[in-house]
Length: 80
Image (cartoon, rainbow, N blue to C red; front, side, top):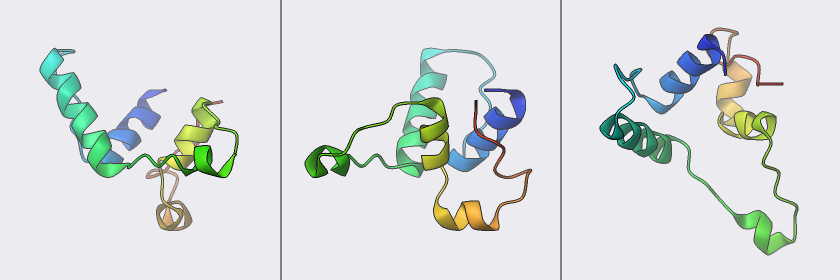
């Protein structure tokens, strides 16, 4: 992820950029992610393939409403 993508992700999960890469910072980022972007695993029950690419998960990080009303500054392009 580039700086723009990282900043957008941190805004999306409501987290500030950590001052240092500490265990506590990782715990806080992880909790913010879990609260903002719930993981659903219905694909397993539906017999669908689970895609684990960066592009797929970047797209799933934004709700349809966010993506529809987004500007380039709020939802940057996904990683290639």
